[in-house]
Length: 105
Image (cartoon, rainbow, N blue to C red; front, side):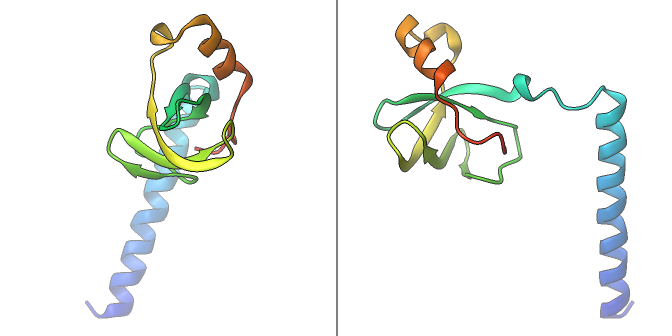
């Protein structure tokens, strides 16, 4: 196979994978965005919600269980980590519920 044939093959495989993924998502009833909206805490202690889809990140740099992204509370770029709702105080739950970043994963 020459270089052009390899590129065409890889493009076909990529398009096929995207199509299959779309069909599977549609069969499950689409994406439930709220399922992926979780509270996170930045290094400065600010709490907010973000869309956290495992393996997908368009607005953040993934570093294992940590992401480098924009904090809308402190208006700075920082490292954030997931925080279970059960570990948040009532004040932190209110803060997370009222502070969201963009809806893009």
